[in-house]
Image 1: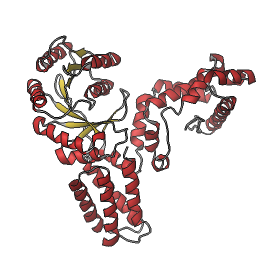
Image 2: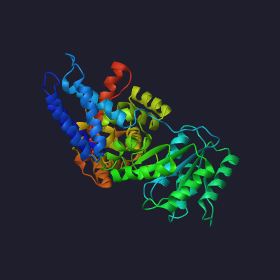
Image 3: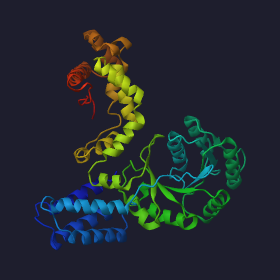
Length: 442
């Protein structure tokens, strides 16, 4: 995500490296590179020009402090401008009615149904009672897909067999939501392969019938400027309240994210960052700007950790560490928690200073597979007491896991080193907080 843009912006800032002060000449060269980087990222030319004009005006009007280099100052100015371009401030979902109605809109294939469920999961975790309404009566299996997702989340789904009128289904769903006491009703609507009059008329009727608090436009960020043009067409008809950008974990140049707020003047509220039901993030313009500039996003990383790590389990684990009772079962459990946090490369990129170091590395989400296979090939006794794993047991574990004895030996050795380090840290500060790099992370 934004890797190419981040790399080119970093190159642009290097133009000012070693310069004693900001001048019209060195700023002009940097601005030219920034504009090229934005256009290459599929940002609209007018938006890119306005952005760089603003940066230039602010840069030339600044006095560089002796403690701040021109390059650092330019990064600060670009960071502030990027934050404004992306929306300026974080805007969460508006939950104000009883029930609050959220209407999902967008083209077919943009991910409306999946993100209806992701949004339901997001709100459920915040303590809201949610109902989903299946109003896409055209796409084959759309209703069934929503029903399956609702079942996974334990969220009720309203649908009607044989009814091909999405407006009446939506009205009936609202009545049912009120009867069941749901606080939020999320309405999944039909999309088309392109913007057409019939689709707009239909979703306009649903809007009129429900009077929703939120109309969220779901758009595939991989489509670049096409996403921005589609957003404008939908906004002209629906006057939607916010945007959900999907597939931001893919090979996207970032043009849609950087342009959409300027074009429709509506905030990006959420971003989809993967296929899992948990892969929906509240959009923070300031944090995204920092990630684009390679400054990391430690706040989001901590929030992700807080979402997946259970406090009670963490307390139990700390007690085990204090008593030197950390086992392979505990280690396996920690791996599963880390995997829930999302794409490993994206997570590492949130650590300040690490993003640039890993940008060219191929870090697969299967990085833990070798470790998991070895641990799964151990007996319960071996996982609890690794000291009993002798030569014969190592051979059996290697055969069972599809690895070799060297890999098994490497894992056992590093696991023991980790336990030694935890023991020494316990003596110093009462608990272990660090973990060395494990094998098979390619």
